[in-house]
Image: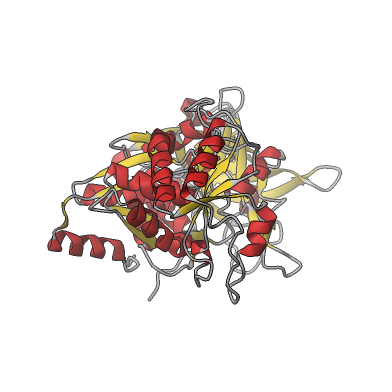
Length: 550
């Protein structure tokens, strides 16, 4: 299948920097998540981009936690982030924290005050917003903007000492209240938060804002290329302003923005995903329907497929939405050469082969993978009583239906030709069982070259069948049926089905993947699977809905 054209303008920039000697021969990136939730598939793109860029150029990539907001951070999120990065196949050079630099950031803020480039402001949050102006109208200067350096230093020190309450005052950069970029209209760079910090304890009650902290972190670490998503493009002038005005770094980092990943039928908002978790709408952050990396890992996606997907979509400067079917295609392409097949029947219907010897069982040799003959074969029991899939029988067949129906002959995969002779029903009219006959001359592998049949179906021996539960998933989110531009939770995003599997399924281990013949790819649930509770999650179905661009 042809691949999509791959683009990466960021690597073009780095190539030029290396050619011109801008950073010597250094390429140093970082992945800077905020530990306030689980990472999602959108973060996977950023992880792959930052770490693989460092790998490509023989450079380094740090994992740095943006822990400047102590009220929202949790060690659970930190542990999950590190598991996600490792699962995707990457290892950081250094694990760092924004809070490692709180002393440096404070000193930088003091430097700005001394240079007359920052001031303590006592406007309320509502007043600051009102004074900021609009996209069409300039802002209005704060009445506290022209305080003396001495007064600002004294007030900022008192803020640090805990003299004031949350929100009572802030430190703002003094830039330009008439700037066409609202982010440059005297942005807040420090606020008061009386909260214990996971890393620094109660040492601080003032914390830097992200737009002030981030460029300082990058500069201190010697980051050469600070790669972030497109929503930070309007913040880049402030990023550059902080580094320039603090003036401590002769080789400043360069911020480069790329388009974030948007997927159809998928919400990329940690806030919304957290609400689904908190409200008990899903099983947790690792619910297989969730677009979190933990969720898709439990769903059965492979890191190789996710990296392939991120490579295929390339790195663009303009926002766009990628079809979920492309991600599913990458998963399917990876799994089809890696996992063995097993016979599993859903909505089972009992088949009795009336002319087959009672008490007899044969072992049929069936290939483990049509794609990979090297996977070999397995022995599957076959006897007089079998289960077939409910979708493989139709009492009144539609046109071009070639599976089992009264009077029709089909191949039971790996076994014999079977003809349906009679439909036996219960008192309520439902099907009790099908009475069929077999042709003993047609055993698979026997060299039979007689008549041909158009249909082949799979089966499970009734005496040795293993009951399992299958969880089939739909999209977690669907378009608003009332025509709005928002997506809503899909109440029918999970279907639980009772099924029967061939006895080889008993050897399955939690986290092991299989192709259920003609149904899709499945994984033994890593969290719930046991011998007493055989739960399989559908990873992806067999049919691809993605078509490559022409």
